Image 1 (spheres, helix red, strand yellow):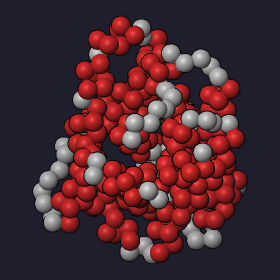
Image 2 (cartoon, rainbow, N blue to C red):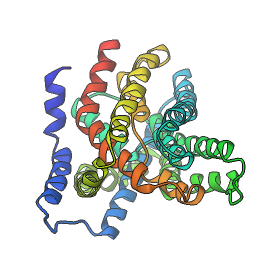
Image 3 (tube, helix red, strand yellow):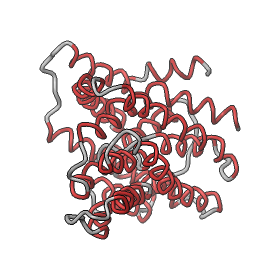
Image 4 (cartoon, rainbow, N blue to C red):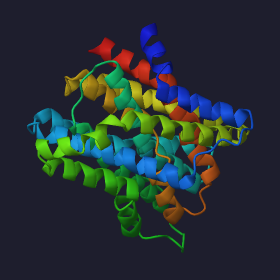
Length: 321
């Protein structure tokens, strides 16, 4: 891997604030971001990236590459939960296996946003349609996770209807906001978009830095207790994303030319959801242990992806290209 890619990423101010959050926890500091502020910032990031993606999409023609990207994103969200569920069943219960599988089949919007910032630093272009690819990968994995649990739990009397869970997944705040923002950005004219550019673009990186500081604090609090659960969960949280990312980096050469778009698709394949999936699993799998599947995605996979994963996957994508 090219050393400058790793250095550029690790010296990214937003990422350094993430490390600051972890350090604050280790030093037992009282530093924290108020929950209301954290929620607002996360909503802002989703709104901003969705709107900018819609603007990019409105200036692009519907090409075969875009169609293939959307289709491949859905296919990933359907396949990854199935094979990961089969692996997880050797170690965990049906409910825990289904929740973890759904998390790793789904995506992390924050990882995606961090990847966009990384591409801007490296001055690599990408298509606005990749925001749509990210958004449509949320619900299918949740649906497959619930289906797998339902098939294995045929005698369960308190089973939640799949339609109810799917509706919950589709109306989840983060999914609804980014899809809605994408549509708004697509419909708005260039002149209208220019009017809110200071809000959607100019302050974006500053808000991302504060949000990653909050993510660092949250990750730091969860990782210590999580590591006590054993080697399997930690190994799974690193190896499975690596496998998914590397495979997609190679396969994507068949239908995507843009390095930036292939990189983003690779990141989506390697990420894991710790927002939309836990919200859905609280309803669909109340017996699943959130102290297991949330820290796996948030305290291990997320830090790995934004520190080592970003430069590693970009190196692989550029080398294969």
